[in-house]
Amino acid sequence: MSAEDEVLASLSEAGLRALATAVEAGWISSRSPNSAFTPIVGPHGESVAKWLGLLGGESFTPVQIARLLKAIGAARQHDRILTPVLVVSGPETPGVPTSDTYAVVQSLFQEAQTEIVLAGYAFHNGKLLFERLAEQKRLRPDLRILFHVDVPRKAGDTTTADDIVLRYAEEFRRRHWPWDPFPEVYYDPRALNTDSQTRASLHAKVVVVDRSKLFLTSANFTEAAHQRNIELGLLSNATYLAEQVASYFEALRQSRQLRRLPEGG
Image (cartoon, rainbow, N blue to C red; front, side):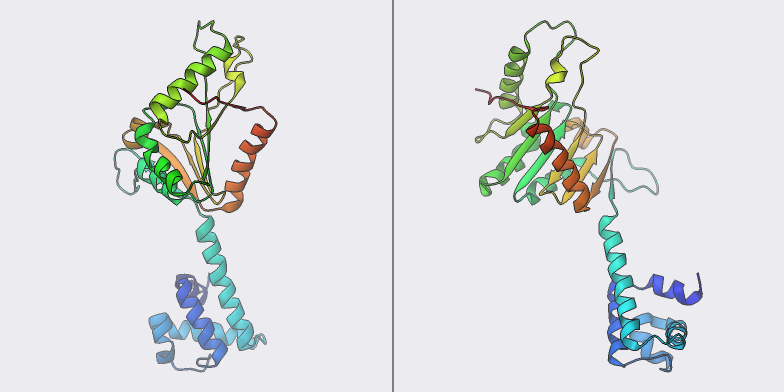
């Protein structure tokens, strides 16, 4: 990378826009004194002037140079939006920032406007985690809340699948969502198979908000996982990823590969 390219790479998105505006308006050019560049690029006026001169020598017009600068800024903004944020909960170590999984999830609950998709393998005293989400539902009655949970058949349990589902529904109502209205809760019936060779678990841990923001995490919906355990996750604003995950669960529901849990009484 040349010195000129390094200078451009160091400019902020606002700096690139300002430089584009100045070039397009004719306020600066490759022949401008270094002092003319100072408000935008600081002491790097000579390098930027050289870069402008090189493009001018290749028959780039000021309008074309401005468009190029704007495109660089837009691409950088796009990359920044699509770059996932690492969410690390646990003891702090030098050089690796940590953040509270609980805080991230609660913030997502508060942002939800139309739909929130949640999947989790294990829940413990969920009402401590979901109170803010229940409040968001009260504020926005049209908010659709979809849980996807694992309803397991424990080793040696010969209870019928229907009885296990009803028992889980009552527990979910009592320990995890004691408020009205009750959300949509779905489970994978394969987890209830008596044959261990065909039994499967719903093991995903994910939150999708309005099909525009996605949080993938190792954390279950438990107080320990959200506040004390060592957990790793990625928070992404990539709409296409959020849409894919939400659509995947939607397809499983529509094909009845995931079944609706009855409301616990």
